[in-house]
Structures are given as C-alpha cells and as structure tokens.
Length: 118
Image (cartoon, rainbow, N blue to C red; front, side):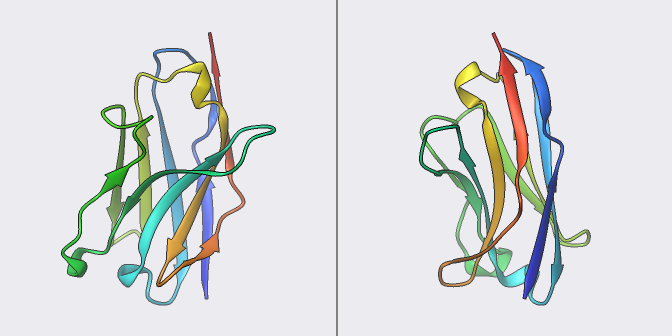
C-alpha cells in the first residue's frame, strides 16, 4: 500500500510559478513510477508528467501541453516527487493529483488545487 499526499497548490498570476510536492509513504516507493495528472472542472483527468524509478533505465516524459514549462523530479531520501511549474497559463487551472504506478496507476492522492488568473 502507498499513501500519497499532495501540497503546494494555490492561486498564481499567469506567467508565475508553483512547485507541487507529493509525499509518499508505504512500501516500495522507490520502485514505482510516479506521475502527475490534472483535472479541470467539466473535463476528464489528463496526464501531465511521469518519472520512472532510477533502476528502470527510463526517462521522464510530459504531456505536450506542459513540455518545456513543467519539470518533474523525485527525492528518494524524502520519498517525495515534485512538479515545478513555470510560465503558468490560465488553462493550467485544475486539481493536480499525484499517482504511483507499478503496472497500472494503482495509487492516487487527494489532489491540490492550482488556479492561474489572467
């Protein structure tokens, strides 16, 4: 079982930055792929970014809509994954959720609200 708790959301003006954190507890965090998703009102949940565990040989990957603006990273010592969001746009407004994947996206946090004003 993995528990995920997000933090760092808030209200920011367009062009600003935020850093989201996702603290994980439970077993085998280090071997899970970690990801961020978002869901805006009235829209389906969409993938934002993911980072595999270091032993997989994989690399980070991003949705086209955030590529070049968002950066995902993880700190194994702190069992935490981050999402640095720069050059934010009003269309980035959503609830951002952290997720962990072994074979499928098995575990989810409750989410943190990000609101970008124009």
